[in-house]
Image (cartoon, rainbow, N blue to C red; front, side):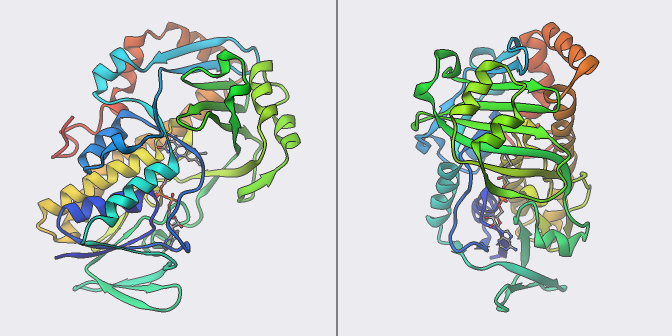
Length: 398
Ligand SMILES: Cc1cc2nc3c(=O)[nH]c(=O)nc-3n(C[C@H](O)[C@H](O)[C@H](O)COP(=O)(O)OP(=O)(O)OC[C@H]3O[C@@H](n4cnc5c(N)ncnc54)[C@H](O)[C@@H]3O)c2cc1C
């Protein structure tokens, strides 16, 4: 059996563990935190995520806190009127074969964790950060933070935005600071007027800022993410901020989004980072998955979805290479990098051209959105939600 160590037990690491174990490997997941868990509340999952979960054998029916969404809606953040909407039920579902839904991060992570826990060929170790590795012709020696050394056949870096494995593999420095500051909170949604309680992902677009909210299943809460491009130049992650700071940052917004923001408490803020796409993220017996490989702004709501697709692909390639990690990792990298690069760049582009546009750019956006029919929108999105195509990754079925 091929022995594979995975650095990082987030969504990417656990999904990869599940896939690789299914392909016959013995997997050890090494998580730096004292316990396995996931920060943050909501997560949007496109049809491509459900396709990948099915391939991984995950029974999404067990996600009781999963909510299929009726519509993606784009609003003018300052003037308050609707610019456009994409219905997500009939035609969308028929075209992509799977739903568009929102889930609780913890529940999705918990489901992956449970699925890994049921497999005798997956071991999970917390408080086991990966500090370094060395590979030779026969395997990889992994050094943990405490100095312990482990020997395995291959190593996957699923250790997120500031991946240590990436640092040693590619040495391409710190992630790029986008300058965008993102505030996150949950707010009890029963206190709102019906238009704020709809089963819709709503995005309010304004010059240099946008607000997204959607209802979470089971908890009667709205998941709120409010982002402003302030040219932020320091790394911040999960720092508590006052409601006054958030109110002041979005004071130019229309009454309804302002009211929603005003009622939320316990805000935390993050500076948003991504990286330039790269074409190579593996070297023989070591490879990257998830944010470690292709960190992106969250504007296409696809970071976790891409991590799930990575897991399906790498597992398929390992199975196809009879457990030999080096050729499997090379093929996985070749299969995945263009698609994930496209999502990285599309996410940035969505921020600039749609969410944060101002002046003439905003007017062009409004005109273009008004012209788009439902069919035209579905066509534009088919590369993302309909993918990866069978021609891109062998073994994918719809
Ligand atoms: C505001 C926001 C909203 C988002 N919304 C969506 C969305 O709606 N849909 C979507 O698909 N995506 C979304 N994303 C993106 C998504 O959250 C990420 O892409 C996804 O969580 C990445 O998972 P990961 O496992 O690669 O990385 P992480 O979640 O960062 O997990 C990395 C894990 O590795 C561990 N670790 C770190 N270093 C080491 C080490 N040296 N050794 C061992 N363990 C280590 C960490 O403790 C962590 O558990 C959003 C992101 C943000 C910021």
